[in-house]
Image (cartoon, rainbow, N blue to C red; front, top):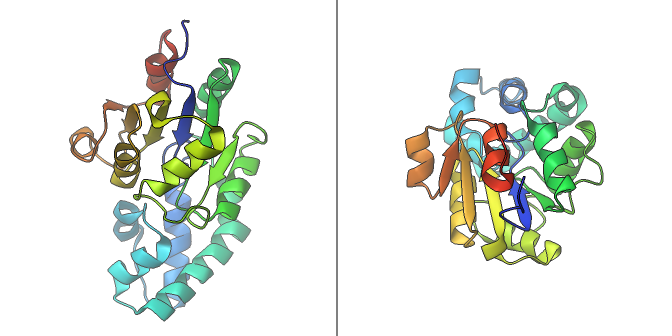
Length: 220
């Protein structure tokens, strides 16, 4: 294994490091239904990525105040009943371990609030592995705005030219591209390879093991 390709890696959480999309969708369905706006898992899954109140407005047509109330209900449900059931994606622990062993600085850049990001890191037993956790309420702007990535890189004291962003949606690709990161790596699943490339991915992979090969060398 050679020298790392970058000095820092920024990770999205949901759908990238953790297989949280099913539990997010289930919590959303329950919360929205309680507010009198029944939706289905199939309607929610393709919309996961932006802040949940945006999803509420897109799916149900409610105004800002009710969307905020639905988001609060979702948060209460998710953090009390769903987050503990969220498994890591295959290869997530191996990749985090390998990057840390290689001396690469790590950060989370998520559209969860910072509390939610920190709680997910704790649930996955990654305490101390990530040098920065940037949530939707941490930087001046959340993904897809580049501020989220630039805030994390400032905390790590690493330039965009020495960093990679790894995510699974256009919000991640746009954020990494517009922040000027050297590697913007899209993981297929929530979006197709073609969609990720069109939204700014410099590389597209199917697994986290492939990310390790790309950034650290070795075999998938």
